[in-house]
Image 1: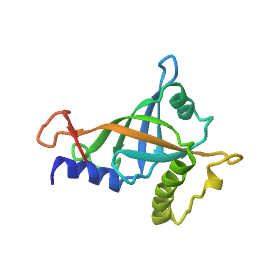
Image 2: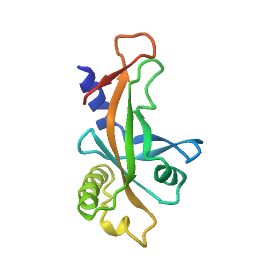
Image 3: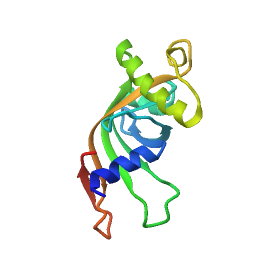
Image 4: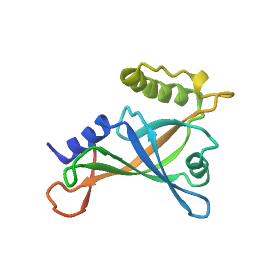
Length: 152
């Protein structure tokens, strides 16, 4: 299995990404969200615009993220670390495309379909997207916490 295969498997097999955001003054905040992806360069999730991480993204769209299997035994797990630019999806065409990606995974995993009515006013939630510019994993050949850049 190549390093890129490892990254793809982690992103394909796990359902939550931890978003690392910061307020305008730099106060950090981390939160897990259920996500979907079609390519490995875009992740989609739904959140309330007034949630802390959503407000942080408006203030500072640059974020970090990590996806990992929390059930892995110590020293056996792998993770994908990412940096990205995030924000709410507002363009109608992009909203339709992103929502199709999110809904497809939701239907596949839980039978729950998502339409624009669930992410448009007056609904409480909105669709968000992270456009990933870098992926890294732990070097499988290193006994220490050494990250290597990959291209999934």
